[in-house]
Image 1 (cartoon, rainbow, N blue to C red):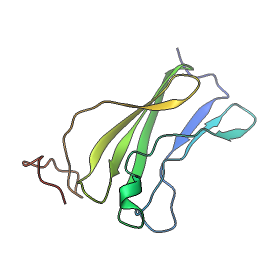
Image 2 (image 1 turned 135 degrees about the horizontal axis):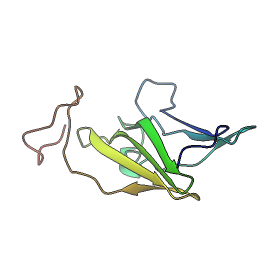
Image 3 (image 1 turned 30 degrees about the horizontal axis):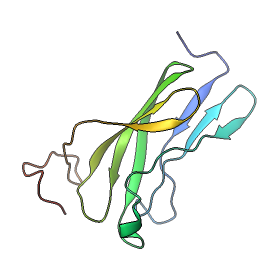
Length: 117
């Protein structure tokens, strides 16, 4: 089912300090207004407050109004970049389990997933 002609989604990251502490803004256009839709930020953990963390969403696709998918990555103060998959069910976003592949800053998989940065 295609998007209604007047509908759109926007995703990305939001922060004043590059990626450090970045949050995942997700917004929906209903044909008349943009609405911020709260989304998860798994890289933002209380244990890392004031340290290097981030969440970035860089792709979004709507299959229908109750199945919107977004992808990106997250990282906290103890890990490499982790793939992040989000799903919107028409009401709220949630994190969907994905591969535990860890990536370095270039996006390359780590050959040693037990090691953290």
